[in-house]
Image 1 (spheres, rainbow over the protein chains, first blue to last red):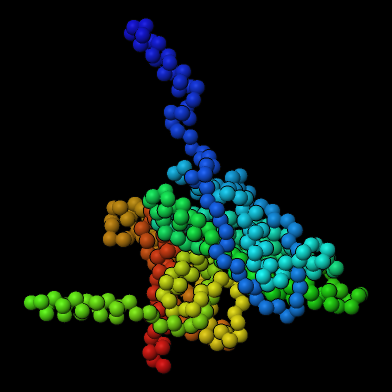
Image 2: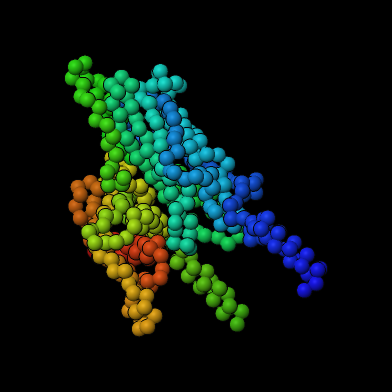
Length: 226
Length: 169
């Protein structure tokens, strides 16, 4: 083997050692404008009618999904990212539905109830391979400031959209799918029997005369779904 | 000859229009609940989630219901008499055997899932229909594909049952 071949072999070996990702490709997709989508709730949800008027102050929205990359919703083919954190998307969607119904309090002081939101799932779940399976799950802990009692309300939304081959169509379908799942979860929350029951319990305790109030019962989420 | 082609075109057009006629809406709302598993059914929790989502999608496709509700959603008083609730249970699941399927063939090693669905009236809780569904899929397919097949079968059976009940009335 000549000196020229030796040099060539050395250069090749060094280049492989120095940057394997440049040769074999990097698996981690990076957010770019062309692979970022914007998610908004498809429409505001009209909440159910409650026996008693009340307002809610939305305090914190916390991510409890345990997902290290919550903004990455689809990994293959360069990835698809959402433009904001799922917590921000959910906060905006909740506020948009609460405002027109008069449920959103201006501040925590004037509110009857306070709400802390925990996001458990936001993105695509494993599907059949022939479609995209969008799933949004969150829990809202409602607290009555006066009595200190709290109730948990869980909500889940799902959507199934057709898979696609072209990147442009994949992005479109994923966006539509996530928006439908988000809308579904909001409907499940605002029109759910769990919310009605939680509000009724919390406000009934408040109306009781002093001394008759029961101890806070804690969470009342559906144990079957936990 | 010209008349023949015109009449053929008209026949095809009216035939297609008759086919495209909107199916009748039988109920205003249908609520789907998550299927429960009996002991011994070794399927993941995501299976029931996917089955729930797929079943809602399939029931929406049938156009027999005004709205397919999420689990636990309240219904307006006016809509309650014309509303149904679907409760279901996964009764039996056989994992299947890939070797058997490859060597013997004829769907011998297929996975098998049996489901029972009870459709009740929302207003009084009376049972309207009880559906016994069985699906078989190749053992190398994912759980989600089996859920898809199950949802399609349930929606199809429910459609038939509802139509039959309405025809008998």
